[in-house]
Length: 354
Image 1 (cartoon, helix red, strand yellow):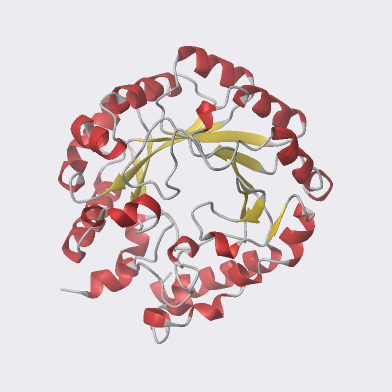
Image 2 (cartoon, helix red, strand yellow; image 1 turned 180 degrees about the vertical axis):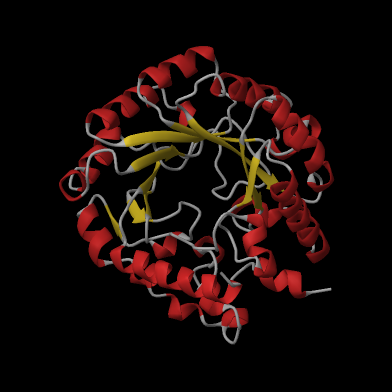
């Protein structure tokens, strides 16, 4: 099948998914507290927070209507923060989610994930986990702002890979300091029996906006794309793929399994720390579609979110006359700010530079 036809079929698929907007992945931003202070944090989380942790009963009450609209176990709740492991009731929350027919998992830095926590969460029905590892020891600890962060994250991963029923992946945020060590990091992950590896670049939002040295140049972006493409082509020991953050132009089918598709507000929703109803938690808060304290979550999901399901408003700035707009639909929602005047990053455009 030629490239043009597969792209056309993907657009038909994307349009159909958008029309149906079946929710299957729901983020719960359960806390803004965190046990680390990472240089690239999109939410600028700290040990203390301006918002208290959301009571679990508030979240559970809000998602009850989903039980009537969706089959049991068809929605996965991804518990995140901040750092979800700072909550002492995390396992209890997860257990109740399973009792109510929701699958659940966590997104964690791994710092507080030890053998006791592993056993507790597995017993509570945790089915998925994402752990961040941002380079080898020196660079990971630098980005995570803690000299023990690497050791703790590796300890978490060594526990996770022993549980065959866990769906897991490792995510790496690539920046100027760790780009060159990706081949060594790949070998290290393979030595730890890691099978799934997802790579991000860093968006200029939150704390990362204060650290421009984290952002890759066009030459470095191309180097990253080449590394991912070559690994996927020649090394079947690990499943490496580029994240869903941006359309990658000519690299599309080389760096991920299918064409770019931002599913925010289409298959992905979220309940944020203040009760706001949105999609991926890194999306600007101005895109919130309602609030669980005032609105019915299912009603909001079914009848709002037009800003994420009809992306014609994105035809502005560098997207205005872009030949690839029909393929990327304005890129990732988290790269649009409240002004909505121009997307903050586009890998395809960056790759066009020489």
